[in-house]
Image (tube, rainbow, N blue to C red; front, side, top):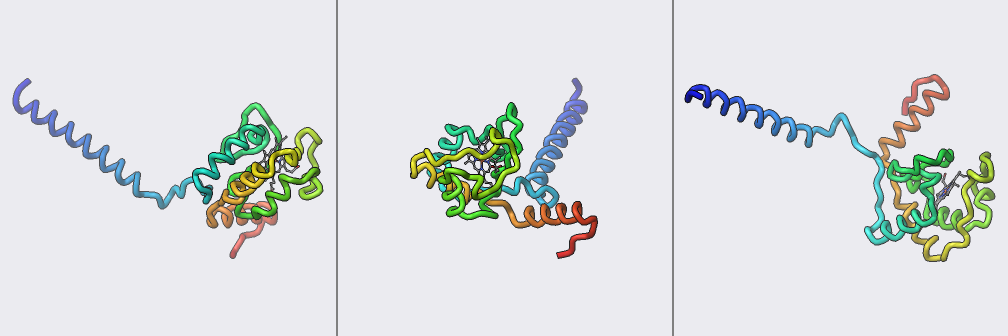
Length: 162
Ligand code: HEC
């Protein structure tokens, strides 16, 4: 290879690296189009670790979605739990999980086998941790607004202006 050819290859190589690097940096900072996952938790690491263990042990993921994950072998139409703490309180979750008959609190139109089971048999501490964790599952305001708007426009066919 001649000297000039080598130079050209080096220049091309450096240019490619520069372009890739600049794109990566821009991609990292340019968050205006994609606002990302709107769900977050305000719980401490300890509370979320303990709660998620209880969650797994009791197979809540067989029916519910959490952090957009669920058991894909199950098709129970249960409400997703992502962001649920933005619309309900810790006291509600504790009462609901402690109820002998959860359907007396939230009525259900599903078959018995798909309905929310009673977790009154769990230790009080476990129900408290679960309730605290559920209450910590928040959703960004802009996402709630977006969802409300889409729902309104779908149901009424009118423009939502708020
Ligand atoms: C057999 C399926 C099933 C399992 C297992 C299950 N759930 Fe549910 N859950 C439901 C259904 C269905 C509802 C909606 C109410 C109904 O139809 O009974 C519900 C409702 C809820 C709600 C209220 C949602 C709202 O709208 O406010 C919470 C919170 C909840 N479940 C948490 C849990 C937790 C935590 C576990 C595990 C300890 C769990 N669920 C296990 C099916 C299930």
